[in-house]
Length: 309
Image (cartoon, rainbow, N blue to C red; front, side):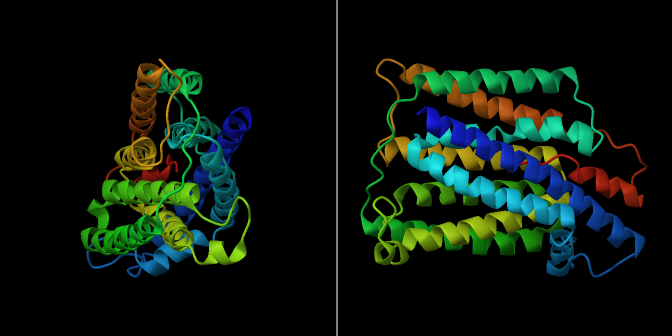
């Protein structure tokens, strides 16, 4: 349990730091697009084009952030194997706290009293969860369930990407929710993946859950980048947290056999609800007030100052 908690905290730190660096890279890319008065950076619906997203992804800040995301993914995968999903996913989603604190230095954002209170609420809720968490379920599921997970991941990412591109600049919250659901599907896939313990390469490569992990992980990162670009970060980040924690946590209990300590079910439920609410509050209160006039090039940059995975 202790090793799992430390692993989840380390994953959260990587994700939180990576998200801030990705936001810095997205801002830099947006600034360049505005300076060049580019008309190729958006689709006809007002959303970011693939080329615009690619430009954001090749800034050095974004690349370093992506490396941290991959490290966080590895640590998060280990945590998902060692802890109940309602605990591992909630601890990882606390990267919002790290993002908020790092944003003070890297993005010049000041935290107000409501934000600090929300951060304290999240920390307190994580203590409740750690106290109440019992043994994780076995994770053994029929192979048909793995195929369903792959199909759901393809539909989620493929259909979601199409919807986001059609909705354009109005899709920030949807992109955040879909990226969170993608990361949640990734966590579930890691939990049920065959051929890991003990390691057996043919079983690993033949498991549809492996390809669900790849689809959900890559697609989730793309949608997260889109959410960073088109802004309304408070709602988008809140939606990401809900998608990343609530759905996997419920499936872990209902499908994979995760449980709390005897007599501590109410503590686990309370900690879970409070942690999600606190994380949403961090995202909500973390939206900075614009310091530029609407319509100015810099106004769009402020929308990507705070975001997390």
